[in-house]
Image 1 (spheres, helix red, strand yellow):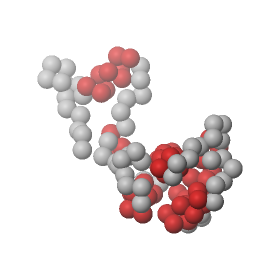
Image 2: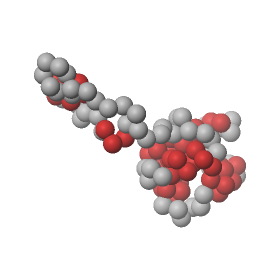
Image 3: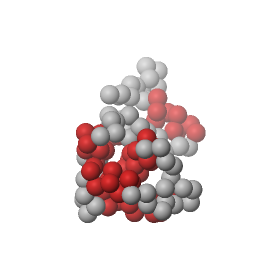
Image 4: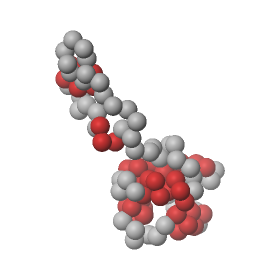
Length: 111
């Protein structure tokens, strides 16, 4: 896990100094140690790691990666549909990993 370190001269953490200098939003330190949807296993365990983060955007990334692993692609211009689909798994209304795999296997129109 990464932890920002203060600069010896300024005492400022480097990510904060860069965002101040260039006007960016900076680093969200709370997310530095979270698993990425690009790095978890494409199975129940990886799904659970992403689900535990309660992040629709992370679930979207996991679903996109799973779709690609299945040999398909997400159609362009279906971001809202994919977001709504992912939201159902994050809030639990659409079931678990097995339900996700089954839904993707049924070849929804956005794939």
